[in-house]
Image (spheres, rainbow, N blue to C red):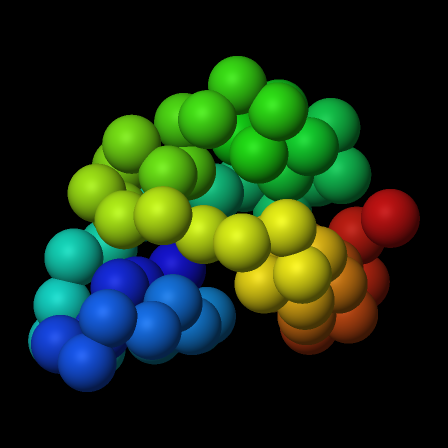
Length: 67
């Protein structure tokens, strides 16, 4: 995932998008732990709303087949 220059958070499957990145293992438990503990918010150094977190989790799980 990456916090883009505009401040939005998006998936970055290639790991090359400009901005502040955070690696999250695609296993459902890892995604949930990153969200629950606040590790994702700390790594990206930005606030992420509940709806946005849900969207990112669903998008990551759909893309990787996790869940």
